[in-house]
Length: 79
Image (tube, rainbow, N blue to C red):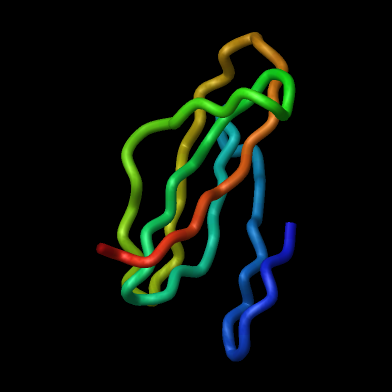
C-alpha cells in the first residue's frame, strides 16, 4: 500500500506478531484513520474505532478470525 503525500511516508506496514496481524501507518496530525474489512471488496465494515493522527505510528492488532478478507485504511480530516 502507498499513499502519496508531500513529506509523509504513507506506507502501510503489515506484519505477523504472536499469531496476530498488525497493521501500522505513520499518522499526520489533524487526520482520522479508520480500519475497514471486506470479504468481497464491495461491502466494507468498520474494524474497531477510528484513531486520531498525532504524528506517531498508529497500529491495529487483529486476531485471526478464520475468514479470509481484505483490509484498507480510510483517512479523513478531523471534523
